[in-house]
Amino acid sequence: MGSKKLPEVPAASLADIAFMLLIFFLVATQMNVDNGLERRLPQWVEEEQKIDQDVNERNVFVVLVNRNNDLLVENEWSSVAELRDKAKEFMANPNDDPNLPEKELKEVPIFGSTMVTKGVISLQNDRDTKYEMYIAVQNELVGAINDLRNELAMNKFGKPYDKCNEEEQDAIKEIYPSRISEAEPKKVAGGK
Image: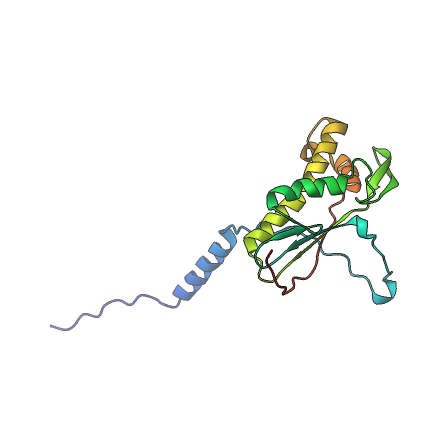
């Protein structure tokens, strides 16, 4: 009795099938890309177009985070829990305090002639600052601006900022701009 030869599996098309499956899964898989902080880089300006801009010291809200995750806000030790209220008071300057940022009269759509803050929030952290602390500080600073925008929207339009139309949102952004400047992290000594 002779040996029976087993039929061979055609292997030539297996590579094609594997490639097709790979392409299918790459196209069909959803990837979550919403992680991180939303930041827009400033527009590139040529060297000859740069203008020296002196920023009045009273217009800058300085926030420093050291390697021990201690928070120094306007040269005073603070906590993350207090940061949002301090940033809101700084940016709003409701009583036109001479120690808080200057305001300038601007023509704002919908609002007309309105006093607009010149305030800038400056954040600098140590290279050894924990990421969780960095994110917590960022959240509070962005939250302060969002709170001010929401309060203004409620007072002017009777609805939250996110329910306002694009024109209303743009006008509110002009009154409370999101000016958060991040200095390059440094290696500095820490501790109280």
